[in-house]
Image (cartoon, rainbow, N blue to C red; front, side):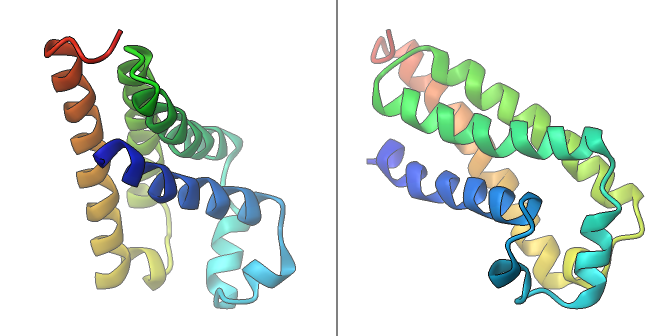
Length: 131
């Protein structure tokens, strides 16, 4: 059940990434101008890290549903991407949407879910459920 629920959660992260980096006008219309300005300053390495975090997590979820041991590697790669993205957010001049209470709460939730999914995959591997 956890594996199935993680797919829409991680798919939304991929959707957010894709609509942001492809500059979807409809999607970006919901953001204040300072957030769009901030996104425009992302260095290439942070975009690659963001992609690794989001797409690695979705791959991990799919592999978890398929009961593949490779889910662990995908979730670990996702955490690496998340760590690099978080470092960039904390060291850059991020707007209040990122550094405010709501942004910090969302960041904390993403970390909790990402760590929990890696832990869950490792536990399933130890129990012999993942091949």
